[in-house]
Image 1 (cartoon, one colour):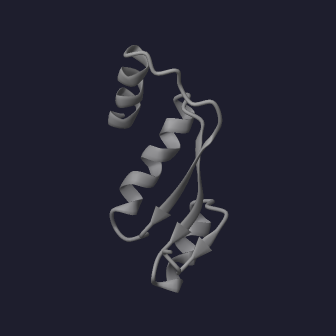
Image 2 (cartoon, helix red, strand yellow):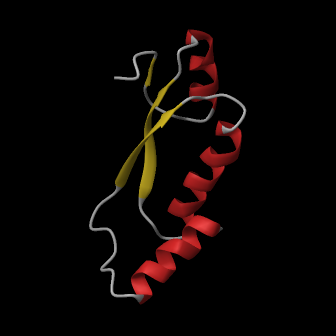
Length: 79
């Protein structure tokens, strides 16, 4: 993926890598989210320890989408 390529390039330039899991919050679970959530998951599979720990959307009905993706927390408060 493009993100994994960026991480590989960073490491080639002397980046030491991540020392722990990168915890990610996703703001907005609309149509674009179905594209980038799988890419975030793929990073974890490719060796960059990361996970989506919370999702936020102004529409409370999108909680089901977050649950379906296995995201452990949901909120409607973006702050």
